[in-house]
Length: 323
Image (cartoon, rainbow, N blue to C red; front, side, top):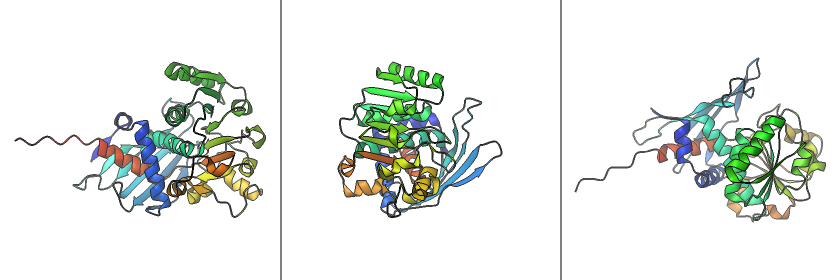
């Protein structure tokens, strides 16, 4: 069995590669070429979660069975990553060998890349003002991927910890030379933003409809399971909704369910899948909507596409035959 760790995953997957893999994964989902169940979650008495996500891709270079199993712990008490686990690929090589790929690094990269793809499809081409709500690993990956698709010049950051927000702002300045301000509230952070990334593990809504600027694109990815929430339900009445998967999002998003129950999302509006947007070759303006929202909960198809690409890119070069 081939085993691929975090270092190898990060070495072979560039931002450009991640963007293309996201495009491939979402296209496969919306074309009906993926069979995947809803995420199965088991919770411990201490707040940890274990999720299992199996899938089968029917055709193409990513074809085959695979399953991701991950433990999620947001306590950070031991300074480890919040996600730990593996992606098991069957028939990962021509000889039928299995492969085990680090799930934490794949999750970090594919989640940020999904937001970047949505941003590339929906945000104005010259959008340069970014609001980052959250200060952890996903915030760092999201900034890197936003820089890959838009000319970001100004960043406003808010975090539930003032120390965390200040540390993230210092990292942004040091790594990218960006102009960064630390906001006291989410409303202050998004006031002039053209792109908003919400990447926390919050269990209570902190962003409200009245906080949003006139025009913006929102990537809401932190609340990817029931019981977590970042957005207040009324936001859905003000945006055009896009999702990674209708079935997955509606089963895992507390705020979407609340928005439907409270009448902010009509029964006929289940959102447009990003894969459908790719297939329809729609413009990058969100169909003219001043506010767009990409709600992402994460799909096994993304994990399998990224993991199989890592395996393929990790193969040693074929030695030239002797003449």
